[in-house]
Length: 392
Ligand SMILES: Cc1ncc(COP(=O)(O)O)c(C=O)c1O
Picture 1 (spheres, rainbow, N blue to C red):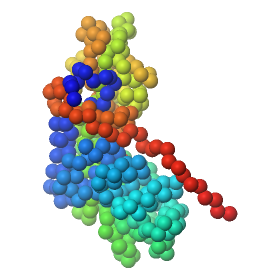
Picture 2 (cartoon, rainbow, N blue to C red; picture 1 turned 120 degrees about the vertical axis):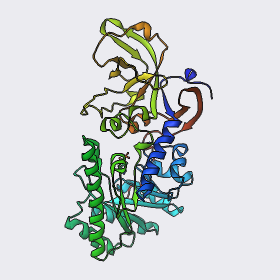
Picture 3 (cartoon, helix red, strand yellow; picture 1 turned 60 degrees about the horizontal axis):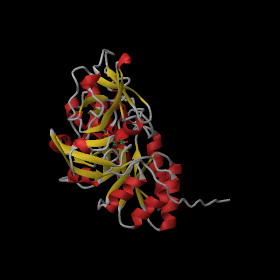
Picture 4 (spheres, helix red, strand yellow; picture 1 turned 90 degrees about the vertical axis):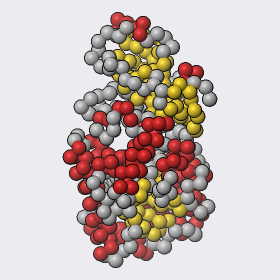
């Protein structure tokens, strides 16, 4: 497989030791609190990353795109939750997976979506299980746990033979905006109690609600209890990133993912180093912009992933160029970073940075060898034939 120094840059790099430690941390925490994991694979997008995550777990996964669902089912995962409110255009491929024997569930929060699922499933002769999406934090979509709309939706689907209510789910995305440990703990409890309340309301009204699914990396790692919860979904924890480090969810040294770039020049009068990893390699994510420490477009480390004491960050990106400077804008000695020097840039948001690449170059700590190149499905969608039918 060669050594890191031979990798053509920019390239996505994954430290297996850190990946394994992050996987073990989540597994042990959830096991200690007595709940199973349904990992979200939208960051990983690779069976090689996800296989060890599933060891000792019930075996189901969460996906954010139909492509992920197809890819992971082709690699033997047969219990898949597609956890984005379902759009009608995605139903044919999801239903095809169901016909092929994959246990595929969708999420929805309105009767229009339920009707679309019902029509498509009935036409195909299948039944689509679904979870009602809850809004526990005002972050995005979903029904609030105490809303009358919850029971109204459950009632509406009773007459729809193509869909089957299986439970409730929520994702406390606002946890990414917490600023202290007590806030994270409180957000985790808000997520848990909201989901449990909704499940209890459904059950009291006579509906079955076997699944109560919650999760985000910050809430999964800061929850003190999971009573009433049947599964936790977390995803970015496998890699961690600067946003998670800024939240206090991990240390910088836990970040398993990076982009290896080469120095291609300098602007000495401006105290800048230029490298060959622009937003095409790093993404344009600025997730740390509103955190106490703004990491620009990424934290610059040596090739082994150790940050420089002079605190270098990517202050700007062009398509293929990273513009690197000291955080305090102080002088940078060009001789310290000759052309060709390899640097590792830690990402703000692992999902966004990973999505720019088609493979992981897997390394292990300070060992210079590249152990494996693991394929990942890049992007979130591909071109598929959609058959449009018009009803008059
Ligand atoms: C529905 C859903 N569940 C779970 C997750 C996992 O969150 P995290 O990546 O913070 O672990 C996400 C992430 O966006 C999500 O959208």
